[in-house]
Image 1: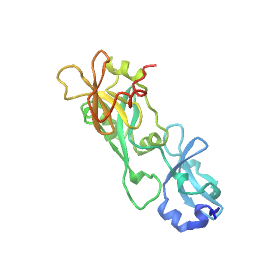
Image 2: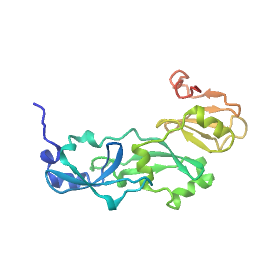
Image 3: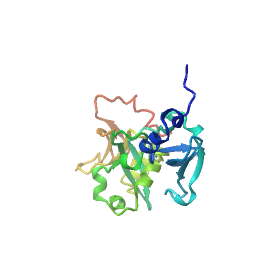
Image 4: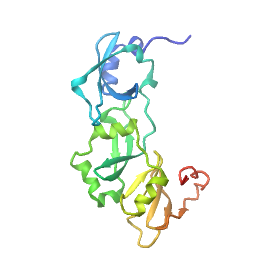
Amino acid sequence: MKDSRNLVESLGRGYINDWFQEAHFMHEGKLYYLYRVESNDFFYAVPYGENGEPNHNNMTRLPTSLLTGFSFFKYPELGYRNLKVGDANLVVLLSSTRTARRGLSFSCLNAGVPSVFQLFPENRALQLGIVNQSHLMKQAFDPTFISFAEGLPRLLNGDIVGFAINSKVAVMLDAEARTDPYYKIMFREEKAGRISSDGEVIITNKTLSRSRLSEVFNRG
């Protein structure tokens, strides 16, 4: 028989407060993180504001009946994300550290920057804290991707250094290229192909087929 109890009823307040602290979740289209379970009936959560930062002055009380299972704290597949830094676009690669903690919290979220971005000012945004863990977390749960059709002209015009099409695929300037094609396609963390300065797509990874990536490079 299916257990109809919520997580607080089945695991206890102490367990939730110890192992789900700062675990993020989406509720009614807004990002929150769990602050503390106060009783078997309600818990407090911190919502994110319009500026992409947690609003600690607007602590929200929510019913524990929402915590129907571990799936409540599910998050989209991590991987490539776009971060707007002024007029520029920074591509980051998000991953999580495996720990005993449940859900995705600040302490578990990691961000890597593709090497080509380290040659450009966009990377300084992370170093200087202009882009922080809160901005990364917002993109983890509510990603903003750029289609190939939109991103390629901006890349070829030199307006951006690269862009993430989805969590698995990103396109960026190839810092090692000395001749055209000057741009590379990354699938997960491996180089999967190249793009010439006239926009021709060349898949070089033999384990990937053009048909497998066809929807990614649909210009329509």
